[in-house]
Amino acid sequence: MQSQQQTDTIGAAEQSFGRAVLSARESRRLTQRQLVDKLAAFGLAIDTSILSRIETGQRSIRLGEALVIANALDVELFALLGQTRSPVGEFHAARRWADSAELTLEEPLREFMNSALALRASLVETPGLLSELPEESQPADADAYLDWRSERTRRRLAELIQGGRDGIQDDRDVVFVQSRAEVDAVLALVRSYAEALIRFGDFVRLDD
Image 1 (cartoon, rainbow, N blue to C red):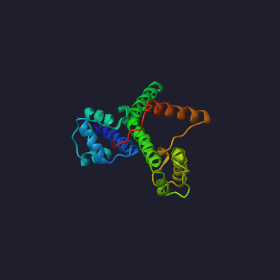
Image 2 (image 1 turned 30 degrees about the horizontal axis):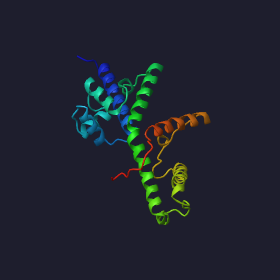
Image 3 (image 1 turned 30 degrees about the vertical axis):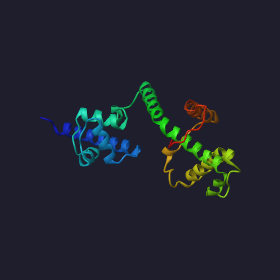
Image 4 (image 1 turned 45 degrees about the vertical axis):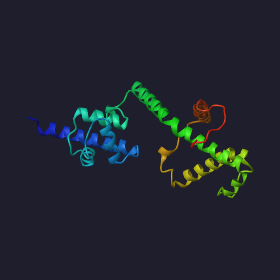
């Protein structure tokens, strides 16, 4: 039979675990429904009411369930248990994070580049479409479109960051660096990834 102290210790641990799950879910911008769907894909069938009870420490958690929740949130189990990670553990966790992020980067980056090239191709075929661009400052011709869009994107993101509106909500939406050298290194990394997706040849429209 458990003593009151043991019961209190278990209860405190479950509440701590629940708060960590809630924090990890919110940091990933997942709703409870979305996390429940991810858990189902990992083989754990619970509903949002049970998840809510887990997050508030009102439901006991089994080890197997804890492992599935950690996997669905892409975090180490000991992080949800409030344990301190060693430098080696931090390194391998960061490495897994980078590998996972790289796998999800290819499609949206390729789609972004293809969509920009599709717009440029339309302007080459029909130069009069330049007047359809909403901004007051428009590119001089189709050849200047990509440079114009790059500058427009930089300006738009700068305004969002300064104003804290629309897409830029908090520090998680930007990348912090410590020096200009880090800026150059990160940009080189992104550039190398983008270049790996580019092939020379005639442009193929997305709907062809």
